[in-house]
Length: 61
Image (cartoon, rainbow, N blue to C red; front, side, top):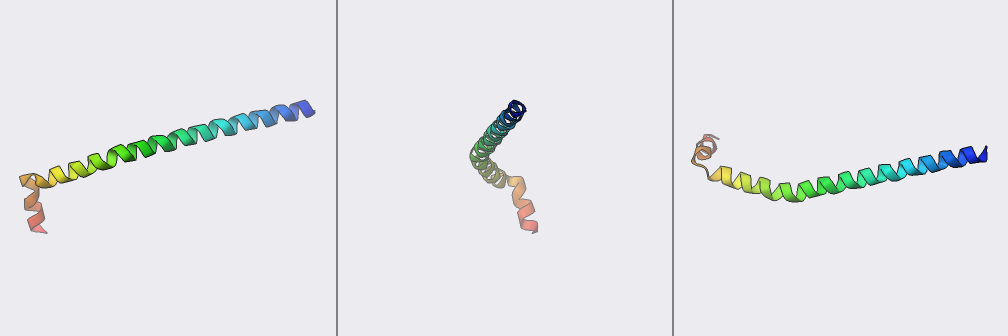
């Protein structure tokens, strides 16, 4: 009986380890996307505001 409980404990520990690894990996991927995406988005916003078509919409406000 105790070996069954040990097996269940080991399985639960493995699942928790895999879950934390997946969570950490997902967090690092999101962080990387944020670090790369934020400057690209700012660059896109600046470039789109410099286009002549966008000044018309700004003048309407």
